[in-house]
Structures are given as structure tokens and as C-alpha cells.
Length: 352
Image (tube, rainbow, N blue to C red):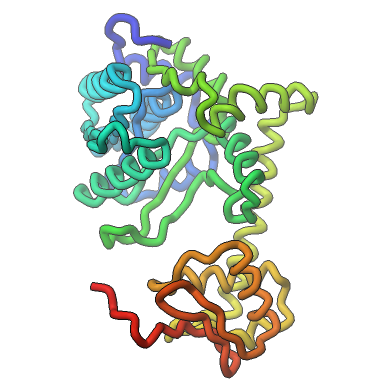
């Protein structure tokens, strides 16, 4: 829906709140938001698309005491020329009417070096910096039910495990950030709604939004799934496949949390950075895999292991026998005395 005329955004916020009451938002997110500190500031990732526009309007209407503390973050990827510039202007005008602080960023990479992956990374860094500068710990995102199905199918194609298949989660705590902040929350209250329901509510409320013309092209995997696969999948299933995908995501998240709790209870990751392999003996492979993943993430100088390399190391941890695996140019994974440790190369200089 293209912006037509001047939208009356405060009135549109009240109308859409009537069409999408709090009861239709994800209950876990609503209950969590109601318990947050009263003076806490919230950031909203605002692209100008239907989902993020609806999100900002619903936050302002359903949590009116938070309005003065809302910050809208918009990043111009500069991938669609004048269309991208118009998106930024649309978001800035919307925020001005709503009395919401607007923070915009632009990708400065040269056109020849731009890519979709690079754009995502640049947007991530922009959001990180903007939130750190304002000491904001809560980021609201407009993911909805269709996104759950798309993400699930994308990650199945990559061979993701439970942690990956449980995304996008209604609430997700990121343990720290590059700026040294405490954990940052990602909140997704629209996961209970389908994209078509969000668009219908916006139309009924008289709220325009911006369409990304690149979504109609098949340049990227997600776009191809959205355009060609998901509609056929829904028709073939002869049921509410989007609701089914959402239920599967919830069940996978429960399994993921159970595995995390099991690894926590074993206490295999020691304070000195070693992994107590002996405590993992006889445990299910899924538990050993989680513990090994945690150990690798804690090693600052370990290189990226291929899937084959990880599986070889996993089998060694399961056996618990002395072994030495290469972890790239900085060192080795060494199992000795029932513990897995990172052993740096002696001639490797400590990075500054």
C-alpha cells in the first residue's frame, strides 16, 4: 500500500489498537512487557513495511506510558535508490507525528561492494551502536507468523539443529553485546498474527506503509520461498500450515530449552575454560553436542570448524580418549586427563 496523502498517525494508532487488541498479540510478550521497569526505553526496528509500521502503532497505543521513551531505528541500505530514500522520509514523518524519537542510518559502502549479506551486517551494527548510545536493552521486531514458516524452511535446508529451528522466538535474551552492554532482549509480539491479518488491520485503520519492490523478485532464498513455495505448501497441506509451523517452532523451543538446562546441570564447562569430558560420558549425543558448541564459542582464538571437523571432534569427546585436533592457525583442541582444552601454537603471537 503506497502512502496516499498525509496519514493521521495518532488516530491510526488508536484505530489499529481496536482492531488488534492486546489479546491478539503474543501472550508471552505482553505479560513480559507489562512487568518491565516503568522508565525503561524501548527501541523499534522500523523499515516502513507493514509489519514494522503496525508494530510501532500498536506499541504506542497499547503501552501509552511508554510513548515518550520509544525510539524508532531505521537503516537505509541504499540498495533501491530513490525508493530507499523515500522509505526513510516516510518513517521520519511518521515518527514526527507520533512524537517518537527517530534515528536513521545509511549504508556507506560503495555500490560495487554491496550485497544482501553485507546490508544485514551493516544494519545490525547500526542498531547495536544506536541502542548502546542510548543505553536501551529492549529491541522490538515485527516478525509475524509467515516469518516463522519461512525461517523454518530456510533453516531445514541448511541442516540447522533445534536452536536454529526455534527461531524467531517471541522473547530472546542476547547475552551481552560488542559494546559491553548487559544482555539485550528481542521482543516479537506479532508472532501470533499472519501477515495478511496485519495488512488488513492497517488498511482498516487508514495506515499506509511502504512496499519493498525487491521482495517480488526471486533474487534471494527467502523471497523465493515467500513467492513460490509457501503458497503451494499451504494449498497442498489442506490445513492451516502457518499455525502448524508456529506450533512446531514452540515445541522445538521447549526441546531446545530442555537441552540447555541439561547441559547447565552437568556443569561440564569449567571456570578455567576447559570442558570436563568425563562428565559427558554416556550422555545423549545432543547433550554432548551442546556442551562442545558452548566450549568452542568460549575460545576466542579457535578458527571456524567445518561440519566434518566438528563431527570428528564430537566423536573424540564422546570417546573421551586423548587426542589432538587442529582448530585453525592459532592452536589445537586437546583432550588429556578427561578434559578438553585449547592449546595455542607456541609461535603464534597474541593478537592486540
